[in-house]
Length: 180
Image (cartoon, rainbow, N blue to C red; front, top):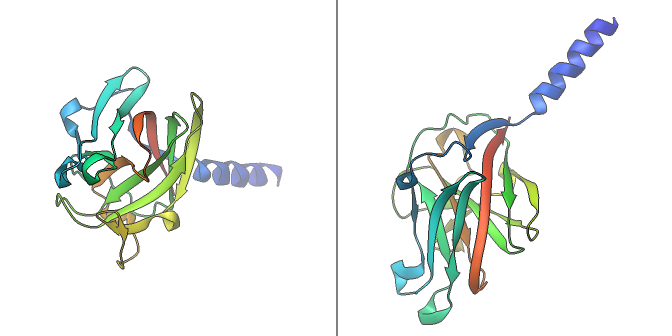
C-alpha cells in the first residue's frame, strides 16, 4: 500500500516539474536572436541579444524620443513541440524593470503576438511562472481580439521592454521551461 502511495506521489511531483525548452547557458548561435526595436516606426531605442556563461542577455536603451518607447528581441521561428503546455517558467536576473515575454504562432515578421508581463528584482535571480491564461493577444502594442493561445502552434519566443521605461536596461535569461 505504501509503495503504491509513494509511486503516485512521486509521479505527481514529477509531472509538476517543468520541462526544459531553452537553456541559454548552452547558447544557440547569436544570429538566432534579433532585435526589433521602435526604429521600425521612427524611434531611436536600441537593443541587442548577447550570450554569456550565465545566459541570454537582453540589453540596450529605451528612448521616448521621436515617438518611440520599446525595445525587443526575438528568436528565429522553429517548432518547439509544446502541445499541452499550461505555463512557462523563466529563470531571470533583472534590473527592477518590467518586461514582457512574448510568443508567436506563425513566422510572419508582423502580426499577432501573445504577451505576458513580469517584474524583476534588481540583481536577484528569480523564477517567473507565466500561465498561458496570462498571455494577451496584441498587435503593435495594442490588445486585440484573437483566438486563445494554442501552445502547439508556438514558433517564436521574444522579450520586450516598453511601458515608457526610458533608459538603459539589462535582463539575463538563464532558461525557458514549459509546465505541462
